[in-house]
Image 1 (tube, rainbow, N blue to C red):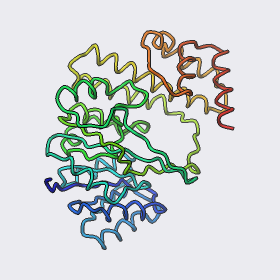
Image 2: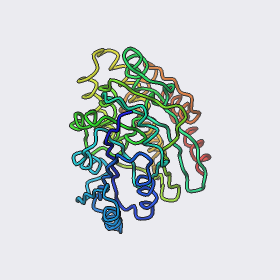
Image 3: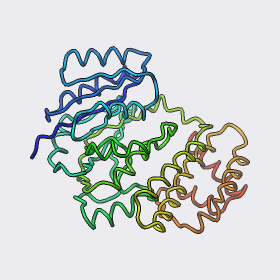
Length: 338
């Protein structure tokens, strides 16, 4: 096994409550050949000062202070200042097992590759449950990579390979060569900007079995699940990026169109959920959104495989939009969120 330098990049903003646990889990890694880049994205709390304190006590830690520009701008700045052959992203309220990088590094070959572990959702209630990639564990190269991963990379309820930039060791050039696709206006599903082109460019992808090394913290207290007035515009920006990536990197244009349409229909479910969180005119706005996007015809023309019960209900309303179906959807949503 070669001893590759791995850059661990942590975007930091307003994270003083969680930063000790996050950074501590990285500095304690059993794999020693790492550099740790903390990007303080204009934090107004003690986070920036804490980052400097970590750097003063550990020579592997490098701190970048920048004006606030959002999560994507922070990890991009960290990437530009990294020296490692591979990148590992950890968000500042998450943490990782101390042997995560060591175990993942055993699969590194030096190719343009992505090594994927799985993760645990950690809730403030103390509940914890695992999340896995849609594809089976294994090493994907050649025809397997093309047929089982790349040809199914979009349009699945459970993504074949998660689009999170975290929970992975990614060959650096797969990120740097594709950063021009990143649109910092995108706030929801923003990692699709970078991981879709990275996956399509990869020569090798490893999905580890079990291996829930990454702990994704889900703060139930701070999650208001409020209505996002800018979500529909966000989806327009995201669709533009998806089209551009597929046009540049996908040879089968007909299949690319099918994948994109399936993906857009799944993303539309997020838009529907957002409208359900609105304070007024839910039925009117949701029906208008479906009409303006011609959802009925599109959903009937492009069938989806939907297993989640909540998504199944959304899908049925997409195929049969009307006041009665939307009313039933509203009732189910309100009962679930009492």
